[in-house]
Length: 227
Length: 227
Image (cartoon, rainbow over all chains, first blue to last red; front, side, top):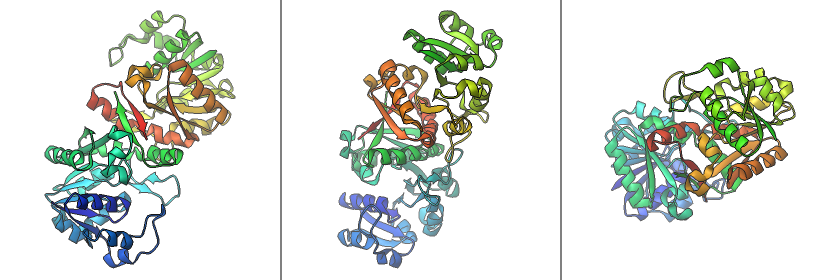
């Protein structure tokens, strides 16, 4: 399948590499290709700059947000939630319409320092804002409650015995995405929370997630719903 | 130990009954004793009105919020978060000062219908508001992420193999409360998130909790942090 991944950060890189490894044709999209490739500073957690990563994953095509959106039969929003609406505007509505958009974004606002606040929450969410702005896009919110490495390989902790949430308004799109999560990445326990308003609940998990990251000194953990 | 429980709802009842069963001397406090006893309508989930419950738990003393606060060497805030600050004002600062206050309240605002929004979140929380209003009270936020029956008997699901969070500014108080959670109720996995600002994170779990309650058709579940 042709897949367009919007966002070249750790999430975009990790997802693109995995999807490409699975045999999909992936284009990763960024605001400005030249600027992204020219970056030399490593990621705060020690990951290499994008250009170095891209040399090692040359099979992943690189393009503008609009090019990646046009390329993909299915799209993934891996941009920072604070900038997602602007990124999707650059991607272009006509390149998005009719497609499934897996929305992984979280509205983490680091502008006031740590811990980050959410730029939207409680009575709204990034997932809902995207769905309202693009009513003909099939937004499925998922994967935003785990760190990038776990998204594509949940078996890295607890033998994948932990929970992922999906929500969205289009039942067929949700079923399709749930099948991909299980088949491509190995998720076992996927709970459908209902319509896209439930993105509030999953995005509002981030404050405790960020704190647990500090306490546990690793992002390699997840929540399991125990009954 | 003499324990004062503020709030006569399901949480207050369940905690009071368990503590009394464990041999503690418990007084449960309400805004107006006569009104509380006069209630005849059953709880929306079918539990009996307070007076019926109290007849079956006559060893639990009943008093005003101020009487219960004065009675307890340790206090539990089991009021609805939206009304907690007002309830504590009625309890009286001099009856609270110097004591551990286990804060279970969640700022669930049902006034706009379902699902409830939070009346405070993101950059503040009920736990923090209480600690700021009463700097000489040792506020320990915990138990607010599970349903009342699980609070006092976590083994009812998954052999108690799931996680409870505590946070607060007073290290000794947190250690004491953690000991009680394990010794009295049987909690096994208690994670200390840090200072009281982490109440934001645990209170912000409520939106997804409420939704999971709807999807799973039971409140008898909890999150386990899997590493």
